[in-house]
Image 1 (cartoon, one colour):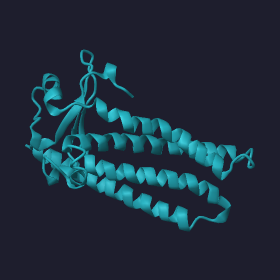
Image 2 (spheres, helix red, strand yellow):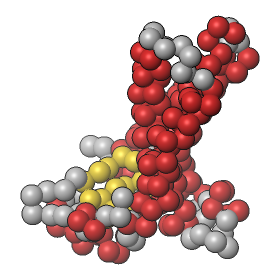
Image 3 (cartoon, one colour):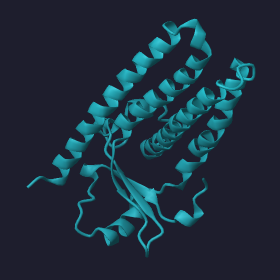
Image 4 (cartoon, one colour):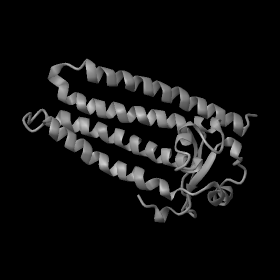
Amino acid sequence: MITDVELANDFRAIHLIFGGIGSILNLCLLYLAIFQTPKAIRLYSTLIINFAVTDALTCLLDIFIAIRFRVLPYPNEDSMAHIMNGVCKNFGLTTCVIGYWFGKLFSNYLFRILRFSLYLHTLSHSIWSLLISFGYRYLILFNTLFVKCSSVTLVILAFYLPSFLQAVTYWTNFVERSEILPIIKRVHPDYDFTESVGLLTGITDLSSVSV
């Protein structure tokens, strides 16, 4: 029977494979959009670059975080938990490569949660980027004069601000392991929540989430 530690390693490998493939493909897309775009669709390449950058960052952050367990709210619960099992864990429980550079500003726990918030930020913005692209292709059929580089940039910034606000504020809602552990054990009493299977965190009160 597979153990929870082995399962954690399997999920980490899956995140590494798909996140790595996604990062490489987005870098290829970014190269094509910057250096190989025909002049006729140069303006549209701005949207492609916007999507490629945010989606590549999403893939990289997914590798670092590697969320493998989420407990959604139950009828009698108003909390949510996550187990993060990313590669940062390999560098120790107190610090990691990036966290070491900012060690005087962030604890390892806070920096992991901040990266999770950035992951949600880039993920949501990459999805919004698809909507902007579809809107551009529809609008260009009727009014080519309105669609200018400045207009496209302003639209991207307008859609960027909500997800940026989420990145700035959402991470403050997450609590440490000691606070979420009693709740998650009550919901899943048979699951292994030792520190060896990943970083346990969550939100204890969804009704007070800032964003």
